Amino acid sequence: MSEQIHFFTYGNRVAPHGWYQKNPPGIHRFYLILGGEGQYTDSDGKHEFEKNCFYLFPQNIPFKAQQNENNPINHMFFDFSIVPPLKTTCVSKLHLNDDCICKQLSDTLIMLFKENPRDDYTIKNVFAVLLHRFCKILNLENITDKRIQSVLMFIHNKYQTPITNAQMAELVHLDENHFIRIFNKSMGITPYKYLLRYRLNVAANMLMDGKSVCETAISSGFSDSASLSHTMKRETGLTPSELKPQ
Image (cartoon, rainbow, N blue to C red; front, top):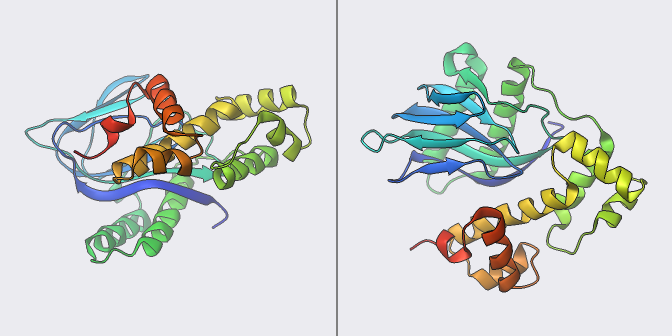
């Protein structure tokens, strides 16, 4: 596999009461719907989730999803970023029976999620193959600009440290303003905004895992808990305490 996938969260479960999802800025979301009833809304309107269908919600597109609380969604899910990034800007769908290899890989993942203890290393590798196959079947391409790929890898590896636009531009030997324009054209978002959202996604998952606000702030690249709280409230409308398990 030539792609490098950075995982935020993944699992296989019946969605909890009150399940409501919006696109996490800067990352892709992949679902396999196994049962239940729900809908997602994107720029083309409202759509019913179909059982035994894969869905890929690409980064930086507006969408929201919710379920019928009387028949909750049962799904396998992966939130991730990928280098090289995917070009797609709309929701992609594939029925489970449209490709026998995708079906076999998803069956393997379902079995792996049932293991205790869970084999996360194998889960990640099987998903990488599944995603590669899914994209091949649907002719989804990756962004090929090596400069963008280099900067994304830099962000994914160094997000915990201070990073400036000037540093990223220097990495790919471009004038700072020219670099920002190229990045924005390829990714639909400025490099600083991508970095910020990447840090917030890391922080959100740490908080949902029960980490303290202080530990989360330092580990996700913020100067302190106040900076994390202020930025998260501004960008998402939520405070860190609202993401921590009750």
